Length: 112
Length: 109
Image (cartoon, rainbow over all chains, first blue to last red; front, side, top):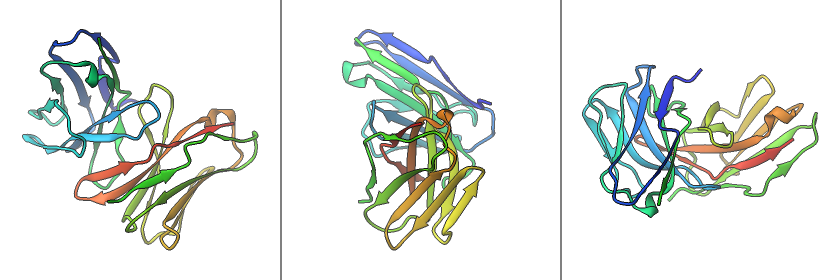
């Protein structure tokens, strides 16, 4: 019953390339999030959006940027990928900030 | 700052038994605490949310308790089945817009 979709699921790409990870949700949620998760580690919030045209950086410093032009769409962009960006990126949404989050299945990114 | 401690060692349990997973936190009691299930290569799936003023919450075979004195939440799965094998994450509300997540405990039934 996936209501939040991430593409691509896997991406292997060379250093220096520009990358955009897509995230879309069909639930009409205002709040959307991007997390980074390494194997066996906790999720770290890297970006948050309150709603259209409203984004904030999370606790974990990230060289990525996000945009929120439409409620349902929250893409993440890396202008110049580096091996240190290799990780799993998870997108989530919620109706209210303190309520359960719905997660996509993530993009596993490998930078060579 | 608030920290979450979940047992990083895997929990092996016999089918049919009750699995109990622990989530400890270090500072103030959060207003909300959630439990998620995560399967390999997938995103977390929400299971239960418990509020600060609630002692216990149940959903089918799942039960969560919240002890603000001990700074601890316990997550129970009764009558464990092999399909329950996964990593279970605890998440604490730390205000404004954020939950912080634990590293999770891997359960193998």
